[in-house]
Each structure stands twice: as C-alpha cells, then as structure tokens.
Image (cartoon, rainbow, N blue to C red; front, side, top):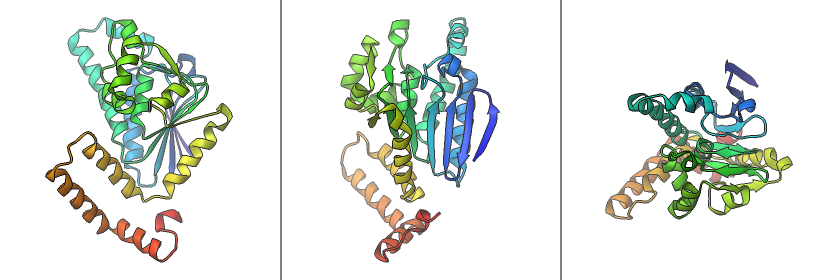
Length: 266
C-alpha cells in the first residue's frame, strides 16, 4: 500500500486497484474548508487519471463522516463580499462535480454523522454504504442558508419530494431513513461496514473498467430525458461503439469461452 501524506487533512492510500481518500480531521468532525476542498479536488483528479486505480473509496476518520463546512471557514466567508463568496462556491461546486463525474466507481463509507456538504459527498458517490450509527442532516436552512451547490446531487439521490422535507426542516434523520429515501444503498451494523464496502469493491473489480466509465456517462445522459428518436439513436450508437471496442470484444469472447476476462485476472 502506498500512502500520500501531502495533505494533513486528507489521506490518499492506494492499495493495488483501490484508492482510499480519507478525510482526516476527526477533531473537527472532518468538516471541510477551502484547503480541504482544493486537496480533495486534486486527489480526485489524480486517482481519476491513474489507470491502475479501478475503485475509489471516500471515508472519514473518527466518529463523523463529514460535518460539512468548517466553522472557521464559515466565519471567514461571513466577512466576504459576493465576489469572494462566488469564488469559494465555485471551488466547492467544481470539487463536487469532479467527484460526481469521476470515471472510476466511487463508494462512500459512512460510519457516522454526515451533515450539510457531507451529505453532498455521499450523494455524489456511485454507491453509499452506511453504518446503523450514521446520522444525516441538511442543516443549511437553520443557518439562513441553502444547500445550493450540493442540491443537484442530493435531489437526484433522494428525489424532489424528500428534498422538500429535509431541505426545509433541517431535521436529522437516521441511516434507515437515508436508505428508505435512496440517499444510501445499504445500511449495515457498525462492525460489518468494512465487509460491506469490500463486497462492493469485489463486485466492481469483476467488471470492465471502461464499461463502468461508459455506464456512468450513459446514466448522466439518459437520466430524466425523454425517450425520443434522438435518445434511441444515441443509445444505439453507444452500444455499437462499446461492442466494437477492445474491452467489449474481450468481454464477449471471455464469456463465450467460459474464462475470466483479462481485467478479472489482474
């Protein structure tokens, strides 16, 4: 395993095909500020461009997954004008988009509290696994703010109807509720959390890495769109291109020959 200690607030650990990005500010409940946002953006770009990395796990040290915005950062932002606030907001929005559109599959390992922007991080990941001890809150309205930059991802995960409740009430909800509304995919006992994450990693490593990246792009293109002539043609062209690719041909040959595909034996 290689560990990148470049950032005090973020640990980047790469073990074979799996990269772990660990928010490492347990004394601040892994809240993020402009420095953490920049570090996480760079780390995501790095693992996203690393051909050896096939799965990315996002985790937090200590009791909390992420408490969202750091209080000291919020105090500084309170003194900012609109121009400085816009620059900060764009940096956060860029980090969230980078996570959401990463070509590698991402898993959120949620062991504890995820508040505000922490919920956004969970919603941006492809798969979210939470401990029974995890708790969630979209707390912005209580501060006279809105969950603006995270809203596209959170609404996509929980739906507009649930967002109406949790954006407006800023109430806390448990892992069972998060699973029920679609924010997380699986809830486990605390001592089974890593086992559940490892199980998803094993499943993902069985699949073609390019196919996974293509699936992620496909979902973004078709989600919420009308099934019209343009959509039908786009999906037909998409599968024709994938079938003709080297990975597509190898996968079909391996299936027909009843052998592991080349990416399954690495």
